[in-house]
Length: 368
Image 1 (cartoon, rainbow, N blue to C red):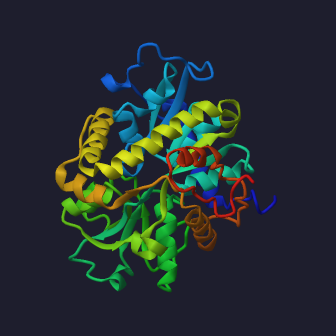
Image 2: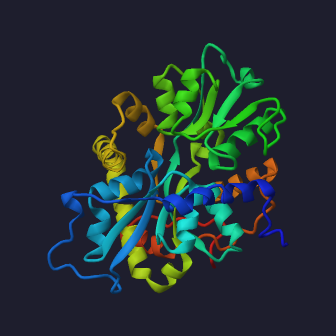
């Protein structure tokens, strides 16, 4: 098997895990809304004759661009009479499966599942077409057990999933300390406990874990339970920026319906511009959409610090995705991948130029 497509067993496990439940519950939960802003405007026409464009995202704040764009009706506005349909996901592998099957056309997703999905398909299934968010990841710990970074050694620290973006980042940080951990089992100088973000706060409260390297809002939920922020991952990156969420599309959909892709990207760019100009209103809009999707809004003591730590950007921060792939290789989770062609930023840069904004760069990983 060529190095560009060969994955270690551990990454194959990641891809296989969601398949155990997909047959029973589908790829993600469909989401409907009575939001008046999502109604089709009178006289609107369909784009490319499409009945719908199927959009996927996670119900967390690092996918705030999608949350705000939906809540503000921006997707539907740009798509005209073509319906914006939605699926909500809890894990990257299941979203990649949905993209591969055609259950969604466009999605918001983290870098590790995008890299994994692209590599497993030998570069034939997806393209990253835009950025969305940077930051929003923290190492939070029990201050009674861990008072400094060196105290992390010998403790039980949660990450969301074997080989996910935060898991890779934590394994890389552990290696940088000179400590040893078996990536597959999580055993070593630190016990890496793979724990779903939904149950991480309960695991912390029960004492089953001593801390967690997690995205927002899970990090701030733990802080609300008495944990302390020991490290913000942004401090480890140049300019304190690293990709946490990108926008991906099925290659076939991009080829057949570029106007529809452009409409969704226009909505994303508009959403990010509004978020950065109106942070408090945007925070409230994102929380309102979270409540609509899950039935529960975030409390202010969780929402406020979580939102503050995330930067929303159209730039996919491609160089940092390449670095994250290198971290996965270093951890032994991935054989060195060929990521050339994973980005197609043509439509995004067309939109940015029309807005008078600077183009973004694919760091040598573009289609041309």
